[in-house]
Image (cartoon, rainbow, N blue to C red; front, side, top):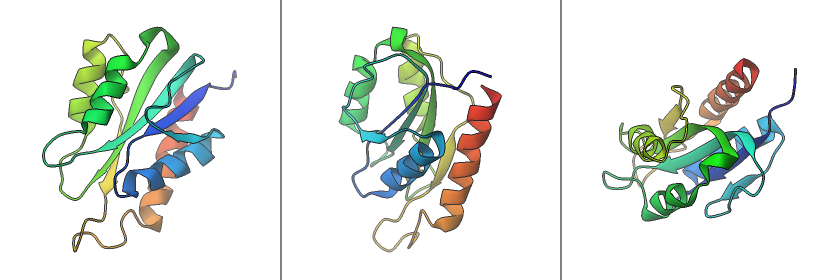
Length: 141
């Protein structure tokens, strides 16, 4: 089976989503890069990570999606963290689909630490789940 070409991009104000990005990148054998690092070469899978801040995804993520070249991305797999239960997935999915970019129906979410909420998250269990999720995505490609 041909090895998938993979990229990992993320936006993280607190470092929570970065922790997931680093695990996903290590699992796929690539480097996690902070947006706005562009996709220079075509990839089969772009793992895109973000958080929900006060009810919405950040303007940086919106701008990154707007600039994505759909001819260079086979599909996007979304991962996210937040202090509340709202995932970034629906907002990111809608924006990507509006650009004609395929979005995987599976996404990864876990709590992220914010002030007194969810201390220590994402924790080791969350990171192991992210690793397992990533492996499943790559294997079913």
